[in-house]
Length: 221
Image 1 (cartoon, one colour):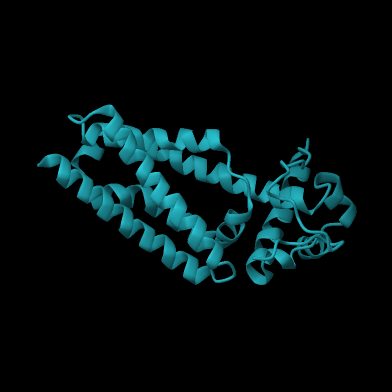
Image 2 (image 1 turned 180 degrees about the vertical axis):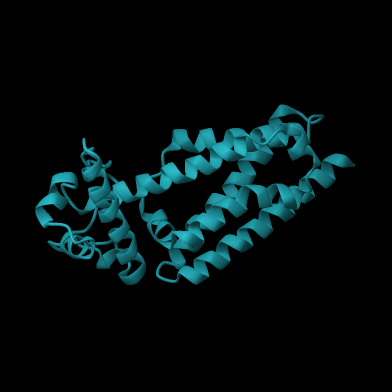
C-alpha cells in the first residue's frame, strides 16, 4: 500500500510523529478546527488519504490557508488531530461499556457479550468511515490498549470465575489478538472500499462470538 503524500510530494510519516496541532484558546478557534477536521474526514472518504492536501482541506472547510497552518503545522499533524478526535470518541464508548454491571454480563449469551462490545464500535465506524481508512496508518497507544482490556477482563472473570486467572488472561489476550489481527490485515486490504471494510468488521464479530462460545462450552464440561 502506498503511503499518503503531502502537498510537497514527500511521503507522510504519520506513523512516526505525534500530533502537534495547537490548542485554540477561543470557541471560534475550536469551531474552525472542527470544521477543518470535518472537511478532512470528507476528503478522506471521497479521495482516500493520498487525496488529502492542506490546500484542499482549506478550500473544503472555507478556511484561509494561514489559519490552517496556525493550528496544523503540516499535513501529518492534521491527520493526527483527526485520529485523536476518533480515539476520544471511541474511548467514550469504552467508558459506557465499563458501566455495565457484572450481573448483566453474566446473564448474556456469548454471542450477546460480543455483540455488546462490537456493535457500538461498528455503528461508529459506519457513521465515520474515514476512521476505518485512517486506522491502518496511525499509531496506537499501547497503554490505552491495556486500559481497553480491563472491561473485557472483568467480563471474562465474571463469566468464568472457577478457572485459573492465567487461563482467563489467555482468553482475554486471544480475543483482542483475534480482533486486532483481523482488523489490521483486512482493513489494510480493504483500504478505499468502505463497504468491504464494514463487512470485515461484522465477520470479526461473528468469529469472536464463536470463539467465546467454544471457550465457555469447554470450561463448562
